[in-house]
Length: 189
Image (cartoon, one colour):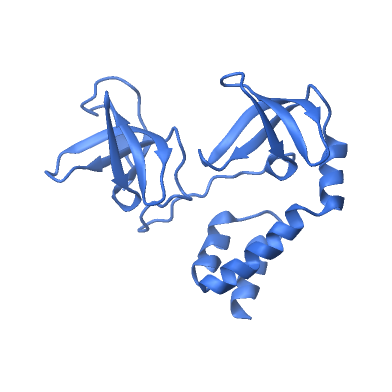
């Protein structure tokens, strides 16, 4: 019951994803599964789907959450279907049919901010983030996340692609592209 109350507090008014994840970290695997079933039922609720469809129209600019990249994507609605929307992604012009629950109608913040003294994980990093890490020899590298895997992130440093455990990554809070030596980058401690 205490876990349910902490989840309820975390979701009151605007979603605080960090607080929700903290509550979920204390849940058992079965409790997470049970919650996922309840969430899936809500995602497929015809009333909720109808409400989203009423708010959309062909040609409308939207944002939707891309789980693979763990970030919002910009695009345009092409067509509304029964349970999905046909959309055109702005960055590459590709067309996708996405479920309505991916669309961020209200412009909610989706980033899960890193907690101080907590390592990064797959929920707190997204494709395109600039990060730093040390290799086995202790040399620092600075690069960009290009893919999120189950236990590691693929990070491009110059022409080299590294697989780095999330816990070894440090977010870069300010920087500019330039020399590969990382001399213009500032790390978040």
